[in-house]
Amino acid sequence: MFETLFRKHLHRFLLGKTYHGTESSCGYIVNDIQTIIARMQDAVDVVLTSEHQTSRVAACIFNPVQPEAAPFVAVNSRPACLKGHLEWDARLGASSQFIHAELAAIAGFGGDLRGSHLCVTDPFCPNCAKNIAESGVRTVYIDHKGFQKDFIARNGDEFQSMSMLVAERAGISVYVVNRKEQTVTPIREFVAQTRPSPSAIEFFDIRDGMTLEKVIPDFKTRIGTRESWALAFIREADGSPRGLLVFEALPPGFTPADFKTRGDSDTGKYRFPIDPLTRLLITVKRMGFTIPDGRVACGRVPSSRALVNALGFGCKSLIVASRACDHDPTGADALAFLTGKELLKLEEI
Image (cartoon, rainbow, N blue to C red):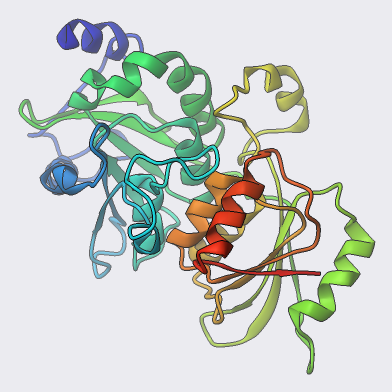
């Protein structure tokens, strides 16, 4: 049955050309097929270490033009702070407790995310597609056995209509890797890769005596609670302090007109806009910044999925400018649980 599903779903995506392990390149995209296969094997080698009992996924991220940065491998995993409070399969609001392997790899990579490559054992979901696009990852490789698994059997249409659409608009090439046959086959390949820049991001100077508590009322007055936003005081790579304000936005390459025509493709689980809290955390990582005190402010209560992601990125304290929920009404329940267990400090302004 799985082989039938594999052939049914994989063959509908492939472009029909294959690069073999004896070749040195895949057009202008892959410089070393053997390296791709080796990095995919790195992900496969650890996938069974995931705590998830029904859907284990692993990812390996590396930057081929930055060989001094060690590849980083991650599995879908729960933030450590949750493990003593919930069974592995309990929900946190509308979300699972697990940080997806793709985002965990992005969060843990020590090299430059911009232009990096990502090997993943399973087809990426629409949420991961958005995070990958936001991070600056250039190319994604999927293990061919991932197309035999449950996600693609249940969500093949969403992979094609949302995940691949996000990747295409962001200029991300996507390939399927067959380790046994030593082949790399494109689903979508860009010869000249131009990456649209993320939008709806603002920086501001931090003056003496300025605190998050003091600037949030100004932003509430200027923006109100109609817009979904996240704010943090960050440090640049040279130690300089700056303020960073990030809004909810469509994935790179999308326009409001695109969303207007495709918005009805949103489902209860997946939606095209990227929530501002996750965007802020990915932006900090992509640009080589840090959030020294782990404090982040949000215009509204984040979604339960965004809260799980925040824990995975090491967020320790959340300031909310309004008790109104973002798009996920269960975010309030998730936040109440986390603050009640003292896993996240909550401040309200």
